[in-house]
Image 1 (cartoon, rainbow, N blue to C red):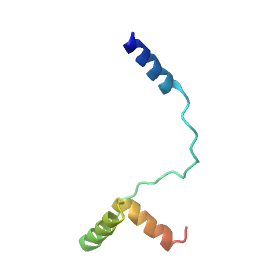
Image 2: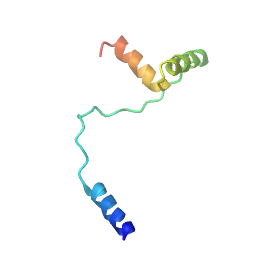
Image 3: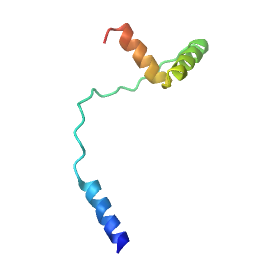
Image 4: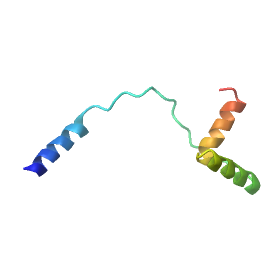
Length: 67
């Protein structure tokens, strides 16, 4: 019976409505080509801040564009 109880508990948790998050702007996927030395430096700096290169680049661009 423990299995059935666990299944019912999982069903209830899956059917509940997810918590509302703040609305966020959709992300757009674009591809850009970087020179190897720039990409390496971007990756190195991102690792220092424990971020992915794309998240680090996003932070840099936000700062540059005053967003």
